[in-house]
Length: 320
Ligand SMILES: Nc1nc2c(c(=O)[nH]1)N[C@H]1C(S)=C(S)[C@@H](COP(=O)(O)O)O[C@H]1N2
Ligand SMILES: [Mo]
Image 1 (cartoon, helix red, strand yellow):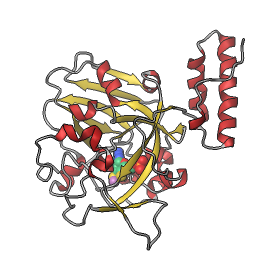
Image 2: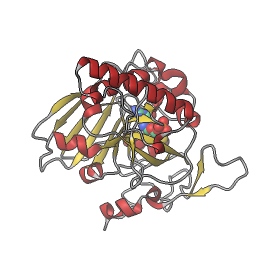
Image 3: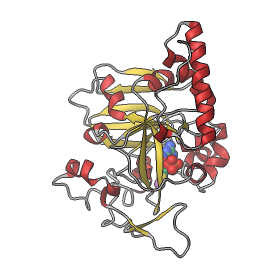
């Protein structure tokens, strides 16, 4: 049988009738072309999906929160991506120039099999999952976002980290011509972030390729970025080009810029204020009006059950 209803699209992924319809048509078309070319269906499906901007993932309820999701419009128009400017609307206005193809990510350093992965290889490395995560920005706002991707650990395992790989450094894209923020001296570029190896291997630490069942818009960090939901949003580096396994703790761009305000761990912690403001509460974008009460910020952004053990015995005030 040439045409069959794709069983990899779950009802839970369906965001609207129109999206469902267009996805279904594409999948069917892709299936037909694949069959004609004698290729495995998923090869063509992923190629077609990429072209059409569609990137479905199988819902992962275990790693998802039930909070009401922030609208696609808000997720893609109110954000931080300093390479494109410092105002919340700048990334959406300016990121159109980001060149996302061809793209490759080099995974190197303390590992047995360092390697460069093309974007196509990364897209096929592990099954795509949809996970609804909270994102808490250090500035005091938050969102709830259905990301599409898989655990970062799936990629790290490929290169076989050595015993010296105590930390992971993430380096992001610099395209001077296309990034007005890079031409301005806001931060040191490239934007660099880091995690301890056990944090990076935690299943929640996610390599993200899509949002709301679509390929990531440039302003959200196309073609791939991190989502580390128990940490402040700045840890979730966008548009990754290099991942280095290292022995010493990396110095992030934000530590470099203001180490007394932004530490290496950056775990969401309502009990540890930023030097210039409290972190006890947050404004959920799209939810709270000017006069509605703010939400209480949760320890580890509500992910304590999954991650608190990583920090046992650590002073989280000193290690902010
Ligand atoms: N390369 C890069 N990554 C970045 C940033 C940035 O300025 N440059 N901003 C961070 C901050 S402060 C936040 S809150 C999140 C926002 O992610 P979002 O646009 O998906 O909401 O991206 C993070 N990743
Ligand atoms: Mo942020």
